[in-house]
Amino acid sequence: MSRAAIFNLASLASALLLLTACERGGRVNAPLTWKNFSIEKLDALGYDRAMVKIPPGNPWTAAKAELGRHLFFDRRLSKDQTISCASCHDPLRSWADRTPLSSGLNGQRGRRNAPAVVNRIFSREQFWDGRAGSLEEQSAIPMVSAREMGESHQMIISKVAQVAAYRRLFGEAYGDERVDLERITGAIASFERTIVVYDSPWQRHETGKDDALSEAARRGLEVFKDNNRGRCTACHSGPNFTDEKYHSTGVGVAEGSLAPDLGRYEVSEADGDRGRFKTPTLMNVALTSPYMHDGRFRTLEEVVEFYGRGGAENPRWPLDPEMKKLNLSPGDKKDLVAFLKALTGRTTRVDIPAPLK
Image (cartoon, rainbow, N blue to C red; front, side, top):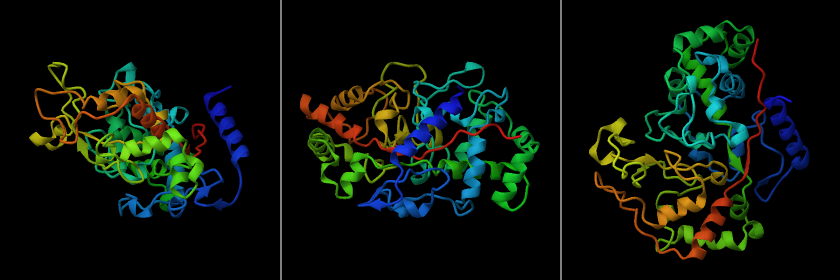
């Protein structure tokens, strides 16, 4: 059985088990899919529509998202037709890669761990260093990266324009069949914005379902918020559990490397940005290992231990002021992991399409 067929059967089974048409107490009981997604549904999913980041030049539409779905999974966009966006952001792996560093064209390894493509609708700057100011900008970069898809933008435009079914979808999404890079990246970004995490125990707890969190997760929530213990909300705040800012924790810069990853500095060239990386969302974090920008930690327990030590001391540039040794007992650490696991929810169901002809 093909990979796409397995995913679609699993999605169908999930839908049959969960299908109910109503919404009660803030919980969405009908499965969210890329087909029935809308911006208006975000409030019922436990988010605030005011958090949405969509450029004025690319308003979200279902037709663009459908076009973007096909582009996202199409390996023909890469130079050797083996790599798609989904190669590193796999729905079967919670829209992440599950390897420390992704493999691209000719098996080349990337520099950083591939972030999970979930809740990107709430984020403006993309990549660990924020070098893309939007999802639209982000989707154009891997296409031409020699370590990723390795193709030219012009060749991708040509490939897409030669497919009759693509031309039809461009017509439905944009009003005419013209294919260009702005439309390609706009469609991919529109599709990625449909992928959200919802109905987690945490979100059910927030809408008044008191028994949604286990006792351990409840204790972990208190540790998470406590400025004298977890201090997690200093960076992981709000409904998406990220401040969308850049911080230095010492990861990847304290081992004496001759060429450490400078993070945000590579974009801003500001001395204060050396070693700083973007705070990721924690939604579905239990499903998206390995962790950190270099994928060094395989488990949440390792991550908690790392922060408990106050990060990694770095002789080259200072750690973020929030990085301090934490006063965590063994029980606190277990409870904190239990809370992080309670951020695991359902994710927008997406069917993997066959290549268009």
